Image (cartoon, rainbow, N blue to C red):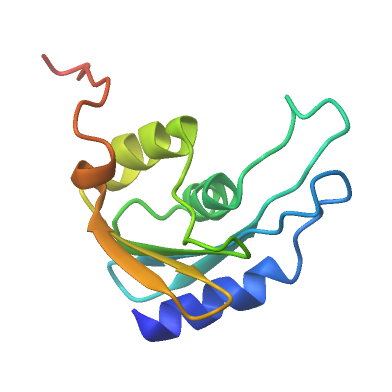
Length: 128
């Protein structure tokens, strides 16, 4: 996961955060080991802002990937930041109970399973 955190740090450099100045990077790895990067992209309304985790996930899905094993998220905060609710929901739907490494620029790190951060997701299956 350390390499994945380094990939997330690199992705963070591309963040577009002119309003909050809070840059976030994410790196999502597929079951085959391919890495997809994401960074937050802000909008002046804030409502159209897209999180780094979603950018990485949507890029991977758009490339045809469907199986994921882990994601790393890097922020500049004092404590490693956690994904927001919408990111957790999308990750649950498309990634399942993946490993999540949260880190900051000081080198602090916390590891979770998604189910620890999102114990009661909304879920339904069209097959049910």
